Image (cartoon, rainbow, N blue to C red; front, top):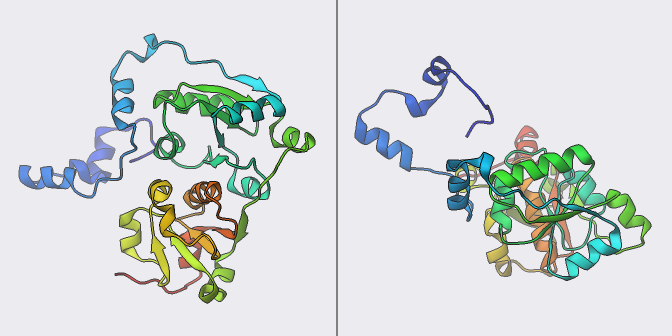
Length: 267
């Protein structure tokens, strides 16, 4: 996958292995092996993008909600997506919120991995620009039930003296020095794990954490790591919803671990 929105035949011939000349059986095998995990709503995504998007029914217009109204929507089953940077989410967030960084890679796809298009959504955003970008990205992949956003952001929530939660951040240096006192959960994709991982780590990709969190001991300190610290923040927000309290998001993830020259192993 490439974030470029346009290209040329010449560029693709030079840089894209998918168009390299090869025998037909080899091409078929290459195109069907080592595919990334598909989000559960992949069929809806394909159909949405195949159709005449210009004539799709208009999405709901999300309402600006004051903190108490926002909280009532949560109590009635709406899912909260916090789109701020992981560091700000870690400092304080709404208990039960899922964290998916808007400016990270594949925002809408990651939303599709951890919640359903049928869910009514509430957004926590930094500003109006982020709100519009989040709505646009979600709409393209079939998430049309964004019913509201937190007016005034987390500052308004804090001023209303409503409950807060934090997510502690851990440097790779601290992780390395404390490795014998922590459980480590690696939430990267299988191919990344296969390339090398921390010796003591357990592997559950972030999009399987919801289904498999019971395999982890909620009473023990847990450091969660991914490639850069974004997917691990998603996993941490899921785990917090299931009662994990001694939880740490590893800053910089395996990129920082490798840059520091710490050991990795290959199974």
